[in-house]
Image (cartoon, rainbow, N blue to C red; front, side, top):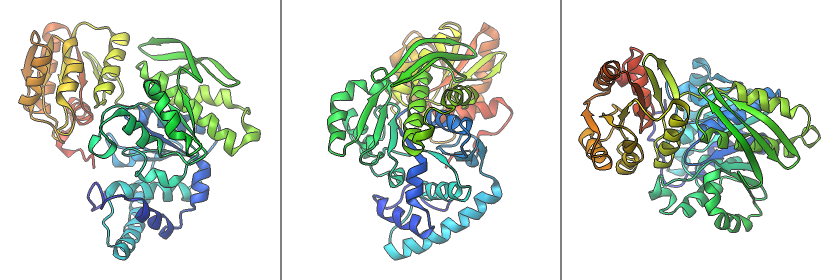
Length: 438
């Protein structure tokens, strides 16, 4: 998209502020209309669910997420529609011109994510979005989303990821992500952050940030799941919504939905206090029910049943696997797995392999780790499993389909985002190497 490295020179906040000024971004308005979503897993789903509520409430709603799965345009949406090619090209030229000027003045290199964030801000401003949901890239302290000064933010979950940048403990990682919230604001924490509660409350205290936790101040109860969706009861303050339904699968999506509802309620109370009760329950039900977010326990085919999941951290993989078993059963699967080079292969293999007796190890075209290394990790985690090696995604698709047909099995594809999406494209007759993720 941009002829820039993935990351720029060091911390980006000062040069990003200059870039937004050069583009005439109204940052006060941006802060008023926006919420920020951070976390290790579940950011994209949570952001999409929150934006869905905003649209259902009748607000022109912007959504910024990353990475995309199939087309770059997916990352920037207004009212559920991805940015058009013409608008993308036009705004790209404006961003590039502004970056050239700021880079010349500061003597610093911008990164591609910074440029894309600026493009999203410009697109939402041109469309006069009344509500905008921004997903952070990495962390929150130095991520471009911190410049939004959003008074409402969340940490969907916390896991060991990008430890060289964020820190080597869960406390440090959660603290970094929490810093996306403006002073005096509120951070909503997902269920798996509860063990860090004492630390986070004290960490947020000196910036006068309130800390809310799912299953503490935010209550969810009576969860029920089927192959077509889930429902749960939600209670926060004087809001009490019974039998809320979502189409996204996996128990972790209920956590994400509860966060999304709370984000919108908190934002609405600040931005439009007189409307806080107006039509909100109908918007929550309609907005959540309409959201479809690909790649999360997604059934891409029924014969044989083939389910993919783009989770790529150990905790994300474990949660998705629990959801798969609850929805489709634990037995009769062929696992197709592979891990990106920068991920923890042994931990991901340890989370997946013990649950499967037939496993195909493969390597994605994009950033795939060595297949023999994956196979070694899988064998260590499950010595009894029949392990097959597929040198390419194309081989993995062919081998999994052959084994599923011969043994009347289902196929589960998990371990990495690039793996899951490449498998889907090849299974549908496309070419994995033609995908562009960056």
